[in-house]
Amino acid sequence: MEAFHHPPISFHFPYAFPIPTPTTNFLGTPNSSSINGMINTWMDSRIWSRLPHRLIDRIIAFLPPSAFFRARAVCKRFYGLIYSTHFLELYLQVSPKRNWFIFFKQKVPRNNIYKNMMNSSSTNSGICSVEGYLFDPDNLSWYRLSFALIPQGFSPVSSSGGLICFVSDEAGSKNILLCNPLVGSIIPLPPTLRPRLVPSIGLTITNTSIDLAVAGDDLISPYAVKNLTTESFHIDGNGFYSIWGTTSSLPRLCSFESGKMVHVQGRFYCMNFSPFSVLSYDIGTNNWCKIQAPMRRFLRSPSLVEGNGKVVLVAAVEKSKLNVPRSLRLWVLQDCGTMWLEIERMPQQLYVQFAEVENGQGFNCVGHGEYVVIMIKNNSDKALLFDFCKKRWIWIPPCPFLGNNINLDYGGGSSNNYCGEFGVGGGELHGFGYDPRLAAPIGALLDQLTLPFQSFN
Image 1 (cartoon, one colour):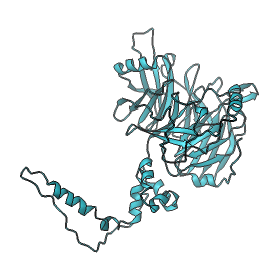
Image 2 (image 1 turned 180 degrees about the vertical axis):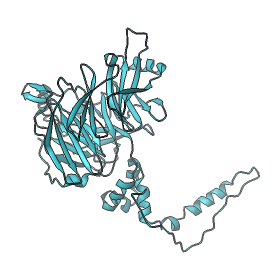
Image 3 (image 1 turned 90 degrees about the vertical axis):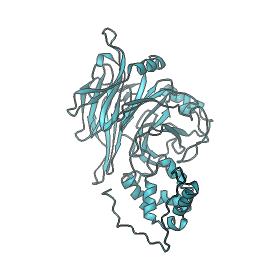
Image 4 (image 1 turned 135 degrees about the vertical axis):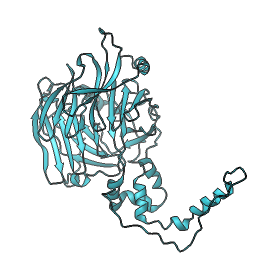
């Protein structure tokens, strides 16, 4: 990579080893004894023990998280790499982006009545830790992560740059935590200025900046909310800070039922309901605009996702009065910002299977890079994965960690006390794209805030 330069590496070995060539038998195939001898020679510790540390570190930086944490058991030096500033700087430069996903058990609807019930019923329930379920779409494998340091009363709402954003459930000014579950770190942000109930939250983190937008559900009285304003949080490497100092008005008659925002090319996008449309928030100009959704009169369970740097709308289409079969379709927002292009339609035979399982309950979608995951509501065992590049639909294997307490996490602490707020066993999953990283590129920027960790009791 151009961003990482080293002088040429030369190897000086005090021994001369002949390069072995395997001998063959009368069938023309190599003898096993010859192959074993060749392997033993090339695995000679006198060679591999002399590899420069910077080359070994570069190789380790390319490992996926699960392999990295297994490698930490090899020796003390590997174990300490996660604390090495030099290695983490190298890691941020060369580690490949991974289009993974993280899912959480869906909480029951959050309102003041439920909150009071939870407070009274969980007083003596002990400490409950939050769990996340990490999904690798390349290998169709699941991992479990624990968030033992997250206080009770916080919910995951977004992710970017290897950090997961948690927001307080209690009505009022929102406390926000940025957590890296791989290393068990938590960064608290200043609370929002306006009191809200369950706002929509968008997060985007780059190598030099962080932007947060908190929109809607303004508390206009202890018993009423209305979608009125947006607050934004910005820090960048040039020293510009805007700590909830920028507000903007929302479009009239907007409805954020999904509570999700998708970031693409300097804008946050979210679904607007009744009727269906798409709302777009320009971070730079601090303005909202409304985009008409395709086939809006015939959509069911629409979701906005990010796909290969584009805004993608996923929805079921049901045109009962026309001679068009029901289907699940994907549209991409064109560069003009107002027109949609249909790019994919679920094969009809697969849609029949999907509709039978879904049974009209609805579904949620989340995208990341070249993948889209479609999760059926009230059924965590059934989900579909669509690969944009291969144009392939796959049923995802069920998450093996739902409904049991086996601790198989590879970072961030222990989850032995997992319980209650997210339910036990089964349940509906919700999530977002997640790039698991050992370090966040904007960690130093956030450290400059020098915020003391607050008590959230």
